[in-house]
Length: 113
Length: 113
Image 1 (cartoon, each protein chain N blue to C red):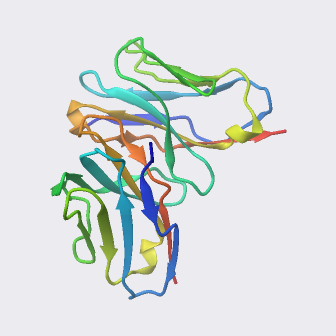
Image 2: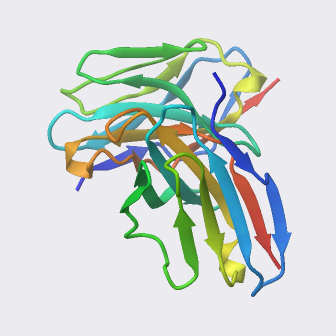
């Protein structure tokens, strides 16, 4: 069974530029998560989807971050404009349902210069 | 609210040594407990889990037992290898956290040949 797929794996951009990350969850997983992980720390939840509905986006900085999961399968996370402090690893995870085990993708490592 | 406390790292051991990484938690009810591992430059991988008291999770020679009486979920391995060098995260998920993962700070493990 294929795992969670994320692209790109690495991205280097200049500040104030836009950037987008893509995630394809494990087939059949209804719940999708986006996390931010700073160096040496645990993941921080940005947004959680149940199918195509964002059910928890309380930690998403909505002034510059946006996300979508239009058909309830793959998802895109966007930052516009990026700031230096956005440099981090962006992780996507999925689970069959909210109460079930989460499986993570390899992450996208973002560097903002 | 619910929380997870892990022993601070880095933990440095020689190959074939016995490993223990302590994890204790605070939670109401009966959360599920997890250990995730993150190898350098990679995403988080589920290592093992336990969903009820006295359950033992095991994988790749690692074990952890859900101890309700001591609110602990310590990770152990009898003989570590250089390839076990990684960051290990303890986490819980339960009703009180709306089934979102509550993470420990992570423990970096360094195995020397």
